[in-house]
Amino acid sequence: MKIFRNIVAFLQALLLFLGFIFLSAVIYSELNSPYNIIIAIAVFSVGVFLSRSLFNLIIKRGVLSVISGDNATYDLDELEPTLGSDVLKLTPEELTNLFSKNKPSFNKGVTVSIWGDWQGRQLDTRHQLDSLNFNSDNDILTINFSDKCILKVKSPRIIFYTSSYLKVVKAKEILWEVPVDTNSKNQYSYLNTAEKIYIKSNTKWKPHAYDIGIGMNALYLQG
Image (cartoon, rainbow, N blue to C red; front, side, top):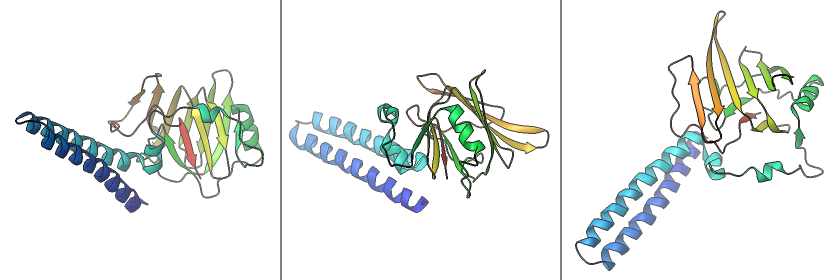
C-alpha cells in the first residue's frame, strides 16, 4: 500500500510539474526579453513548490483523502443511505444501543483517523473495541479499546456504520488517549474551531502541516 501511495504521489506531482514546465515554455517563447525569462522562472519556481507540496500531501494523508479534498462539502453526508445498502446512519444513542447488541464487532480490529491524522501514536495500530458509551449530559461519545486506548468525541454528529467502518462526520473536539504505563497516558486533543483544527498534547508531539484537514471526517474507524 505504501508503494502504491508513493507511485501515485510521484505521478500526480510529475503531471502538475509538467504542466508548469509547459506554461513556462509558452511564456518564454511568447513574451519579449527580459520579461519572458523573469516570468518563466517565476512560474517554474511556483511549479516546483506546488508539485513538491502535492507529493508530500499525498504521502502524508493518502490517495483517497487527497482526492476527497480539504474543502469537501458535507452535503452528501447529510443524505440518508439508500435503501438496500448496508450503511446505517445513526445518532450517538442509536450507536450505543447497536453496540450493546454486539455490533459493531470489527473482528480484526480498527485503525483510527482523526480529521485525516492516521499515522503514529498507535492510530495506525489495530485496536479491538471494548465498550462504547454516550453521555447525553455532556454530549460526549466514549470509545474504549481492549488495549486501554480511549477516544472521547465531543458533540458527535452524522454517524455512519457499515461492516467495514465507523465514521463520525462532524464533531467539536476529539481526545485520543494512549496508555504509557499503569499511571500515565499520552493525550492528544483535536479541537474544531470551525476555521482550523487546534491541537494540544501533554507530549512534545507536533503535527505536520499536512496531517490534519478541517474538511476531513472528524473520526474514521477503519475495520
